[in-house]
Image 1 (cartoon, rainbow, N blue to C red):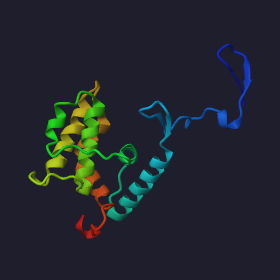
Image 2: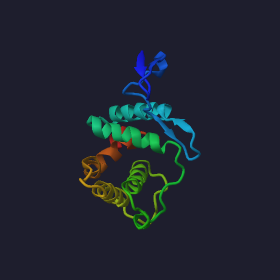
Image 3: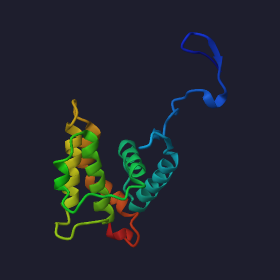
Image 4: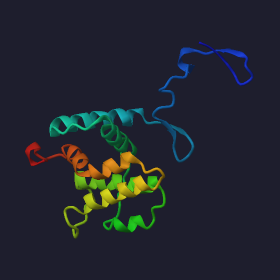
Length: 173
């Protein structure tokens, strides 16, 4: 492909250098500034979401499905989940991403029972997750409709993810 550089000189690009709509998808910088390839995490997450939708017989629309895939990819290597008292995290949250992270952690805890506090109601993480996603929705103007939908569909998203937890019979969902 022939294109022009910054000074309008013609430049010949090799096939792998041709920009496409997928250029840079799945690539980002890590904490040390190195480029990190997220494609393996996205692929694995997509496969898990497809499997869980099939097992649960709950089929999400593309937008919610894509959110779950990206949420799982973002959290694939995460080892730190919120403390037992999630509501304390809200006082530290300042941005849409902060609230999204709280909501994501609550979704994972609710679906998979990882690091679930013993002295809270069964619905604690669902309620806190819904609040976090609602706060993420209103943290920007205009409000983010996707996060509002995630807050309203939290239980459904948790149900889809729950089938990935080992030892849970499908009829128990």
